[in-house]
Image (cartoon, rainbow, N blue to C red; front, side, top):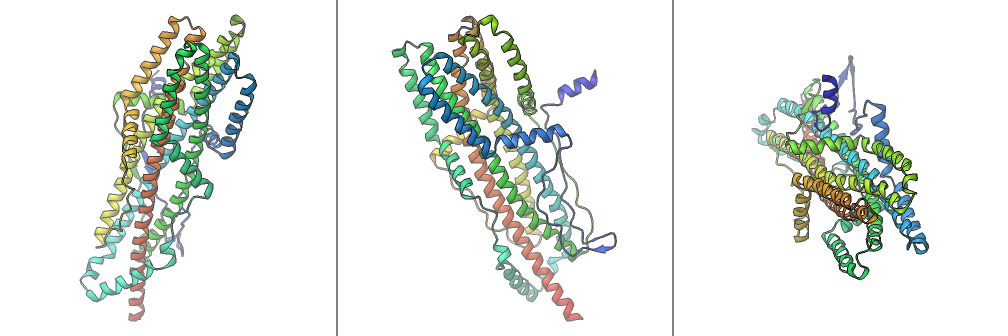
Length: 497
């Protein structure tokens, strides 16, 4: 019984993150090693086959073929709609397909977000692990003694400057390809405050024209179809952007870890240090009870339990088809279920993005603070820090809107809204009008949240790229210093000989 309760309570808790940078030994088993094992950063493989399979499915969902397949599907829908778009059944069918596709992508995006958090925290732990070794070995170099000799200082600065002018020092992080840059640019357009404003202008124009249609079911179905198409596109686009940006960040981390490993190796040669890098444990963040409940739900969605539930619901839905004579009202049921759950997932996704991003940012701030101490310990100034562009009014308004949308209270308010919609539909005895009440508002709200999610992703990705460039630059400066010390000590040894 206790084991069962333990399994039930496990979701929602963010576990401690352990990380240790691969030790760059200069000698092993009595044999000298003449070069670092600078293979870059290697993501950790998950032990369970099911987890690896699910991660593969998530990666595929964000791939270019899937993205273009979705675009082709939307174009086909638009062309067929010329002939069939005036029928209620056609619009209901499209609404069902959209709700199911969005429901599935919701689960993929949640898992994508959870994986990104685990990856970033592991990276931070491995960086901190290597910093501990750097600090120990830099102390062994005893550069403070060299600082007392002006001649040595001048010579060191000259040699270090020579290394900084070398081609390998000026090497930059990998750049995105043209298609990737185009997608990134379009993500900023799609997530812009102006796009959000234009979206709501369209919604209010639709509401204003409602009286001309008598606020009929058909009037609601038109907006439901339009928002459905938009939502499917945004989901596929966001999955692709995230996967693409994740791949780009990994290529940057590869370059950073190669320099960091080389730095460790050179320090070990200078100090004859062969101690393993320490394991660093980042404790789980403390959160409120409400946030824990949100994480609990996210963990269930991220393990794709929701998709399993959807399959069960679809079986039940098909089974009751004969009772409802497979009419338009029956067709709408599965879309209503998927739409309501999708709306809830939209609230959770925005909260998840902001909270997990905040935890990761704190750890990378610690890395920067530890780097600052390293430079201070060797009497060197930190490289000039690149900062993100000062946000304009549009960006500040977008950030404020993001904070509101990501708050725990907003998630709770979203859940209460869903309860209210279910109560209203129940009062209408789940007629088509009642079901549309549970389809149109959730579709509009979820589309809005997906656009806001892109805005939040863009803001986080811009900051992350600046952080990666700064991290790379600091590693290069430290490596130039160590190379300079190694060169001078080699020269001094030759002179003594």
